[in-house]
Amino acid sequence: MKIAWFCIPAHGHTNPTLGLVKELTSAGHQVFYFSFAPFREKIEAAGAHFIGCDGYDLEMKNPGDADRVSKDMAFATELLVSSTLALDDMVSEQIAKIKPDLIVSDSVAYWGKLIAMKHGIPYVSSTTTFAFNRYSARYMKQSPIQLIQMLLSLPKINKQLQRLRDKGYPVKNILEIVQNDNETNTIVYTSRYFQPCAETFSDRYRFIGPSLRPIQTPMEKTAEKTVYISMGTVNQNQQFYRNCIDALKDTGYQVILSMGTNTEQFEHLPENIQVYSTVDQMAVLSIADVFLTHCGMNSASEGLAFEVPLILFPQTTEQGAVAARAEELGAGVRLKSIEKKDILAAVNEVLDNPRYKENAAAISNSFRESGGAAQARAFLESIAQTNSSAHCNAHSDFSQG
Image (cartoon, rainbow, N blue to C red; front, side, top):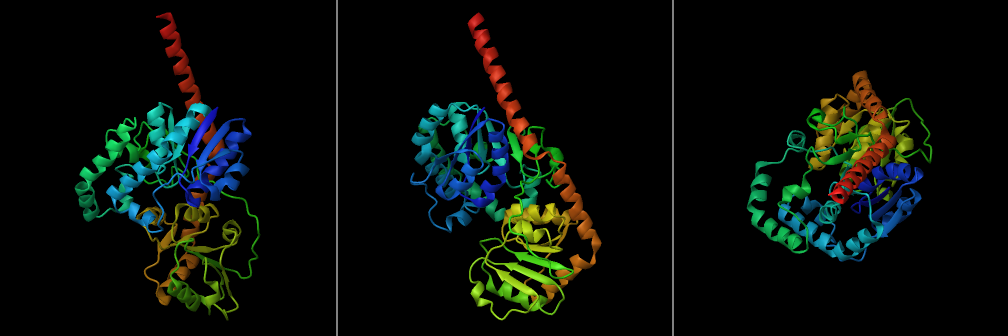
């Protein structure tokens, strides 16, 4: 089986796929992974053929663009269309050469889905967030203003879609591109239990659980209770980190902060607090008793996989959905504010109440029972097999006719 795989240039969208890619290549399948130079090494380490999408004048160049995409549908559509058309000749040439049985594409690498539509190749969505439909979308809490803005931008959106139609992409409307329905084969890197409104998704959705990296650099546990604080690579709110240090310095807890750059601003730290620019998160979570997190899907899933209850401090609507679900299942508490008293109260609440740990363990158990990469491989094989059989039958009918 040959698979063409498309992803956006983001670690949070690439990393979850690598366990499945390795599972596929180890079973003798060929994966041709369209991505970007910073991800080449890890993609090739998983056994895939790397195909670079750098240098094709993709439109997202400014750091602020990623944030704008989530708020401005007309801008997002223009970006999507321009990126797809910039890659069109190169990708079409590669597809003709590879002749893939399947196209797997990250749920927001829309050009992969469009290429599948254009070339009539079976498509599978790789969804590294929750799966969203009209039921689970309520966890995203879109404001009425955002919906009005989207409606007002529809003429601009339709103008952009015409550019795709002019290049042979059979696109009817924007929802056809950005939304999967119950007929779309979809791999989701979480469990049915953790997925909101899981019962509303068809059996074409396979919830395989998160893809976890092995521990590489063990971390020593130096106290009875260990508090881990990380807001991902993006958040640089120095006051937040300072308040965490002040709130927890007189406790007996071991406190590990991973805060990206600017760690030199935090000198003369209390003995119980360790500050790092980066850590082996798996190693830290293996000894942690509570995790204060921004609720990125990967970070939250990794914490819960280690049965670590969460203090929830989301920064985006997507992270808000993860926080809402963890809170709903009783595996964490929301941080009310970055005030020192609220940080300390949240930490103590989670550590003193065993039900948070028990509920995190229930989610962890659901991850383990989800089948992982092996189940996803079997799913992809069955799709390719079904399509191959249908193609052969159609050819046979044509010959007999």
